[in-house]
Length: 117
Length: 112
Image (cartoon, rainbow over all chains, first blue to last red; front, side, top):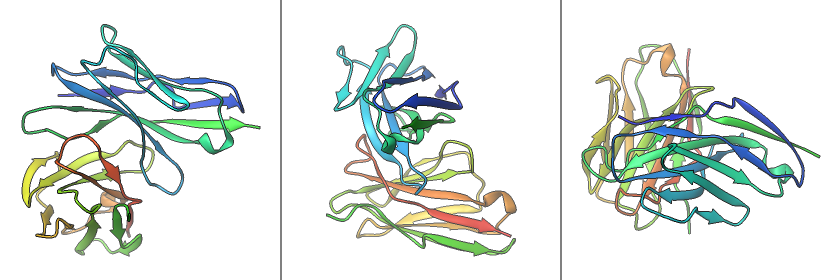
């Protein structure tokens, strides 16, 4: 079984500042992936960044980077230079890479990010 | 290219009724997954279909069923609706049922 824990129900950040959203995971799988999605009020889940369990380098995608600490089972999302449009719900998710649940995403409870001007 | 499209975007049903939700994947994507997102929570996995076969099922009652058509579009059916079925239903497609999921905007179902 897999579990994602996001301990920050809400976060506030000033425009142009950096913010870190926390995510810890629990899985018995050896090979797995970690994802971050953004969900604006419209409801669509927008893919932000992916980290494979065997990737040695932390993933980066533009202003998004994933701080992957495998031993601590954490996969925190760092957003640099926050913009007003970053205000949304953010979800951390994991999926294993084999077995009958191949491809199934397990999501955390989410963190609401509010960017202040 | 068109993204994942879901229909309808909103609907209201009465307890005990049945509902069918539809999803068209991105062209070339052969896998479709369905998720239920209750207000204030993260999405919960319901089903995954790949090449028209069910490849995964979440912890949902038998009132929930789905199928995938030869053109890879999919339907999610929910029978005997309960108030607790009120949620945003999200569809996601991927090329092979592996990583690379793209989500649609969802169908917001309200059961009264």
